[in-house]
Image 1 (spheres, rainbow, N blue to C red):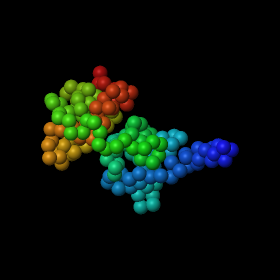
Image 2: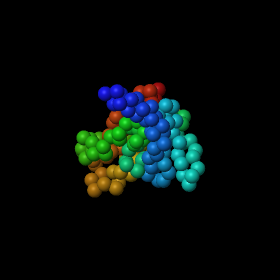
Image 3: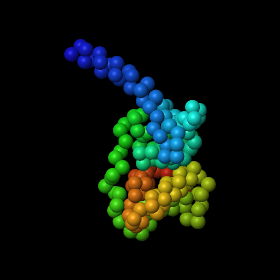
Image 4: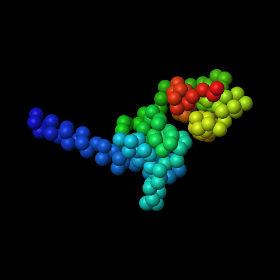
Length: 167
């Protein structure tokens, strides 16, 4: 029992170090690392590490990482950093889209009618998610079905701090 407690203590102390060293790949190249203590995100390409730019980023496993002021703010962490990734196959994927898609609804709520809030950071993020959703739908055999990013938009639509409504 004494050794088990010591092992757990050592493992708990080592996890932040292990997590900070683990990089997940961006879909368009580069290894992303998120510091588990600060949530600061960096990207390493060709041996050069720089802060990851603000925006929505598609990871190689299909997950989405949202960076705001250099900090990872998305609910879905980079695989291997803090929590295991959410499986790609989710309950909403493949469900029919009736009317506007979840990302279209998000853009309308955040950017406002006639693009009143088009210059705000949240609108830019919402548009990036809409572009990802449109790309997924265009690549699908049935473009009237929900995609992975559709579900992400559905989830983040409830986050009024990251995606405030246009006023």
